[in-house]
Length: 430
Image (cartoon, rainbow, N blue to C red; front, side, top):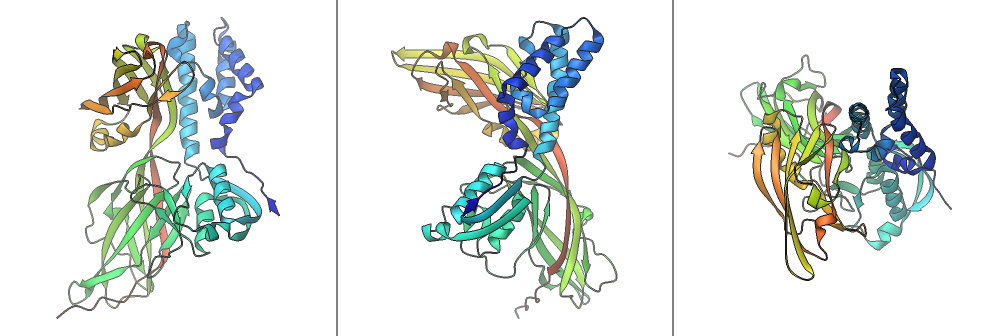
């Protein structure tokens, strides 16, 4: 008998914004923002903020409001709510589920409750139909994945598709030591001696993987090797990395959801059986994606819209069309983020993966099937031209939408892993 109890986190709360009473409250508060009474305006702004990030889709673009004071107030509310939404996105997704489920039903329910996509393409029909007794009470996403792995399923991000993929083949060798911190999974491979460094020390190495929930959009990891320490069981002191003092940046690979850190230590002989690793990394995350809309493409030229920490400006719009049912359009954008230029220039390729589309009169979306061209990059901004080809009708009155993370957040992730195995030294070849 299948029974599911759904715990909704804020990712599913967008439906709240569609409720009539919430819409009425938002409209009434926005109207009150134009009140001649300062106390009434402050009360209205406070009321909007208390409604939370779910009302973000209901807030009008500030530049469409006639009153300058209302525009300023809406901007303040939007920035606060977008920051709150970004902070909430870092919390772990929760799952509450109980009953007898097939593996397919279990995965579908985890996806629905967390917003995290999971691929089962590598599993057979028999495996997907296999029944499981489940009892999850506000379990985190990664703890639910760990439960699946205890049943002989392995989970990892596919290098080609970038999807978190379940497989039936378990990785060979000793299992990784795992910890979970909020929406992040930290995994360390067993320490592997790389050979004798001198008469009293052995160079011992490990790889630490940082995995993000699939719904997140991490950009890159920064860390300093000096922030890491290794303590062997029974050892008298903590050991610093072999390359202490190095400062590194690691872009996210495997679909942009996983980073691997390589750490090496000089360990005194003889080696212990296991060790404790402590440290920290900083992860830059693009959070709180919001659609930035420009009504009527033919009127969007030189229009700027700001959402949170990003400003999008349509610099130029062009139209072409020689056939009755073949219309082309091109849109030149300038996208600017409130972020240090160095960090932006080093890792700005993620900007080119933001969603862009036109919306026709029937609400259908049309992507840039003609690709894009980078016109300028640097100084915390990038200029791009998108090309839309073979559109069914004249797109002059269509809306243009650019979907962008509105806030870039630096998140510190602690690394605290105990009882990491130290495998037998590799014999040196003569």
